[in-house]
Length: 200
Image (cartoon, rainbow, N blue to C red; front, side, top):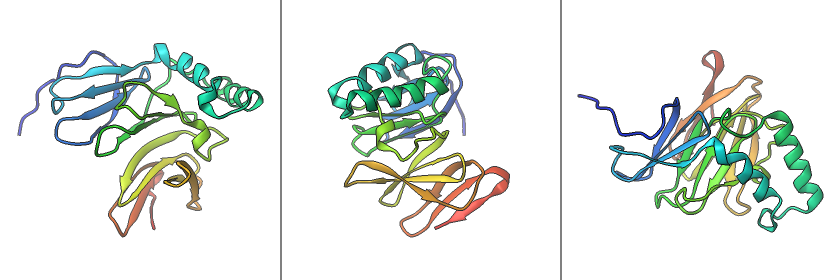
């Protein structure tokens, strides 16, 4: 019935919001911003921004935690840094957290995908866990039924395989961008440019 301005520590455009329960929510947007609310959206605190994003990505991919050898790490970094400099000019388009508000992902252009396992207190790149070597733009992430899906450019949809913890690419036969996903336990819908909708 009515709206009021929340207390927010940034003045950038925000593109997506997701609540894991009545109190805990996350919002993402420009400036590589990730915000968290623990009071149902009345106030928000910054968890990530572009000033730290590039250093986080470089440090993680060069560390043993990434599971990459030196050549693999350099290959990923070369691809990421040559297409875009992750930082204040980068942004997120989608965000998702599990019901416990512990495990989450944020996605954006040029294959930007970050993950957290501590409610957003720390973030790590997840480029090695998605079939997206072309660094296609990632536009949305959402759970539908028991599946977690990401949409993006070139009609691409990715589904998280729980066994491998990897986002596997699914083909739709469409070459345009997809911007979102919806559905229920039985039906999956993805939608994008020029009113295109695909059903599985």
